[in-house]
Image (cartoon, rainbow, N blue to C red):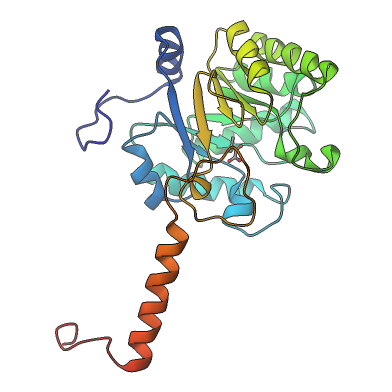
Length: 272
Ligand code: KIV
């Protein structure tokens, strides 16, 4: 694939991802919430996820729980306009799929029809399997999400690593197989021991995408604003900061404010 060029011709589909797993080629994924970032990501990423993390990163909530379907549809539309190559996946927000499989398929359909997503992501194991099946039967590709599923944060009582104990690890392994049987095309594994993520990855035919799950998963995902050093409220150990954009932004804002106050901006060349 010709990453990072205007001529990037490949269109990533769910089939591409399955081929990548077969070939042992790692899958790179990040989140986006608007067209501007999506255009940058689309040069390099195999998957762009419109995460419900937008609730924390964009809307300023403490958790992802308040995020609505309308917010997800709107931001998916924005990201759609900046995405040509990567597979565009949108998160189903809290209570948009847990109440009934009928509501799940309707809401997932909105993300495809109105938002332009090519797939949806649902959090949870065996309890959501009917919702997953209904979406898959309707022709909607579904990505699963196990481990630290942020929509269950109040039930977990915090952001601690999941499935460290044998019983929860066993449940997660079973859930992964149940979801695969229900037809998911890929599975996100969040904040679980690396050895468990490796075991799950080996047990599945579909690709796993890890976040805080070690480097033996088939791919990796991070929240873009975390890895760019923009979101400072939570600092998970699994985030590698590839730059510290917040420092550059503060410096530029300070400089602009000083120039406005001193009259140095605008100059003659910047005036008409
Ligand atoms: O909401 C989100 O951004 C996510 C990923 C980080 C996996 O679910």
